[in-house]
Image 1 (cartoon, one colour):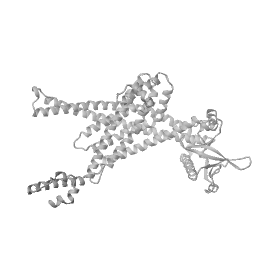
Image 2 (cartoon, rainbow, N blue to C red):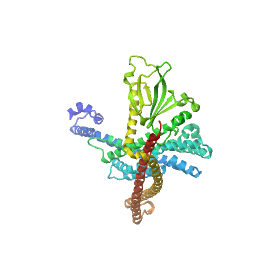
Image 3 (cartoon, rainbow, N blue to C red):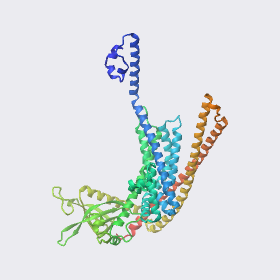
Length: 562
């Protein structure tokens, strides 16, 4: 013992110096010191051996707490969105169609969040299941119902446009909306400041409050996926992640990918609408009599190119063009800057040239590349050419670099291949495209009606489930309180001879909790069935919309003269 205490172990063992006196003379004192050192050393060894497991447990605990806290915050914001905005605007007589466009199915999302919170609280109270496993199980069970987020995310762009139009039209509704945002800002601030004081300090933030709240559901599924990834990362060889967390992370990841695709499509549509407003109307009508913003048209890329034109001296003159590539056409606009500034605004008369991609082919003119040693000329250093398949017209364009040219050529070739494959796939049925388009439009209208009916049923059932959850949680609290008082009075007499709850009362509460749990489970099964029906309707709606856009694209390309 003396050798150990005087040797390197004393320096390596944390805290050993604190338990050693300055002197130890008797054998009894040396025995006590040896016992203390042994205990400290064994404790340090155990902590070192279990360090990875402890870190995993700590990481999982942090992920569970953050998920629960973020879900409570999210549920509060959705509740504020419904009670402080939707309900007052509806009571004030705002058009129902406008409110449906702005708020979408936010009531259903609020009910799902409340159900999620209830299930998390119930699962975490189970002593036999670790909290991380319980959270993963709850999320995995809720993921199928989260498919309704596709509908909300798919309509977010239209929601933003409708909200902007509501602000700009003025009148009592716009004034009410401004006042509601002031009050909502004060509520989010915790009620510590009056509403007008909050607006005075941050009126700009208050004016954007509704848009911020409407963006919350768009990012929520990615937050679930991040929580499950945090659970997976908080693992080690001795403490592997559960199958539930892995499955929930995969399911949420797939849903996030689908939602990202919907957002990308919305951004492409919004860019088309923006260009339709920004480009000179007269020149745009001359190039596209049917208009630029068509349901099937999607924006792909844009940038500055140069176009070769013959000059009076016979040499090729390169003119700046602003190129906009869509899924069916390529627009070439005079000038290289932003359209409205470069083309004279609304009264601009600059030309807009439209090239239909289904009737052209593209090739790289590598033999005309400018040498890298020479300075960049005013012409085309990296040209490529588009030409009609019938040989009647060609367009020689130039990019600023070889990489930029390769990107443009690949994008154009990809769309040409897609269009040709679509024409080939339809074969002889392409002659019936106008009739097919009308048929798909009728099917789309019927599916929208079915979707609205299924949404109403899901909203009603999820609201009933939330009401049952609230009653069931109150009954469980009463049962827990009554059981605790009964156990306490069985050991310690109540002061003043007060009587606690009787056995009959406790038994009645237990029966009420069991009956409420059974009713809730049955209603949940019915709600799940309606949600599945709604999801099938949404899937059919997306497929029909895709088919309609494809057939409309084919019809436009078939009968267009571009």
